[in-house]
Length: 437
Image 1: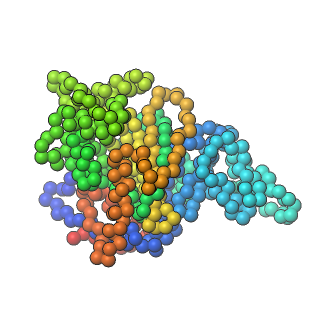
Image 2: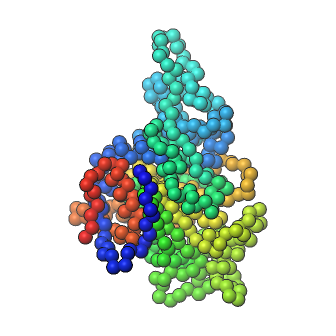
């Protein structure tokens, strides 16, 4: 697919806009999910794991999506490789989960063995198989890296990752993503279709609905959006009140809200008393003072943010990567959320990674990995906990017989529309099923 010129939120002067109608069957129909299994997931670049999971020789990570399983391995030669996670003998899964110190890839069923480059090393009782016409290497999968993230593609003929991601890496170059390291990776089941999940991270229209605690500290109305051919972006200002609020928040309210939502950025625990707001100097705003604290904390960690503008320091740049990833870029942290199909088309997994910026040359270490029980206490923070609680409710409504279509804004929810336009291309849906009123 060629890259088109980006489009922004504002419509042309005098242009007529109408909601975009998206069939709800795309979220509820098992046949549509089977079409995705056959035509989308085997062909698209997908985020598999963080670079920190596979930084050293012998590190490995299994990435699962639907029936597909990919084994990402750091070889003893330092090379990063990926293979279909299946024995060439009778198809048994080779590795499950993740780990380190792997010296060879040995099938647990009959002990066929490959080296970390995927070359066949050993077949027990080999003579019983007669003549093998080739060495039966593991089936390779394309693998590449962007910033601290590892991507895979099951299609051997797919174009390179850089081409697929274009123009997101150039647009986010200011953030120097290579200096981020993964601290933690968590996964939690969700009772919804994977698109219901990722849609919740593709618009901020819902902030005034389920994230009202954020309104005193972010502008959820005026953040510019861009959609490219495959991907999209929102830039959202933090450290100031939402225009939706009738009474403008004072400095103490802005500060208290900021601490409640992301107090770790200013050295405060999320559940702590925010204390008095910083004193705002002459000609400055609370936004300036919060940015100054972030810069000072960076200096204490051996980092230099002096080249960053106020917007780069405090704004959130949210990138939606087709089809199932959202990346939240801040000056001092990077958060990634991925939606994966679950056991059925009405189940999904929400995977969330937390990255922090470290001084150049810092060694990469294995992140803390955790599978969460959705019925237990979830250490995801107030916003992600609210999002997770909303997914099942959203999915249930889509199954009602009178709800045949969703009607979404072509501007406010443009990134959802862009997802479905790309889905139609991959799934060969012609003519388009998307309609307007």
